[in-house]
Image (cartoon, rainbow, N blue to C red; front, side, top):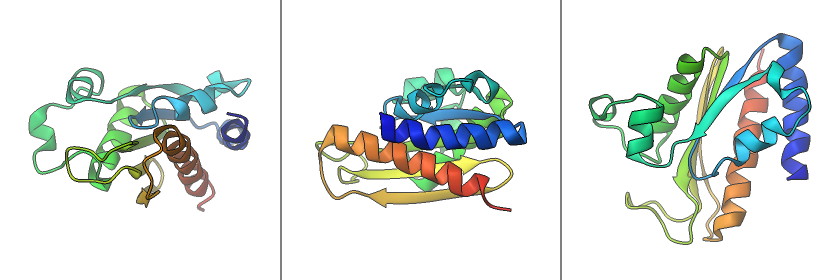
Length: 161
């Protein structure tokens, strides 16, 4: 956790300096993104909340995104990650939304993505989405990798002029 906390600490300083806030919607990272951001003293100045949106039921109930809104968008894609990032940002009134969706392993997901596949997105003053493939099925290792990649995506976005 210390590696993630170090990244999150730098992000927290940036967010506080800029008086900006973050909300997180993750799935395959299992809460590690939020945990890292919350492990930093003073996180209440920038962290508004988040959730582990792991199922369709969670998407419907926690993000309030009905099935009709995801017609033509499947889970574990950049488009879905962007939808989650925008939605959590808007729901919590944050400056930034950060989202992750993928397949931790040890097997792939029902959509045909291999274990280690993740899509990440940030929505705020800039929007970005990316796909990462670790090419292995070590579930816990993938979760840590996904969380780190999400925090790095946020950092890149915050440092964009």
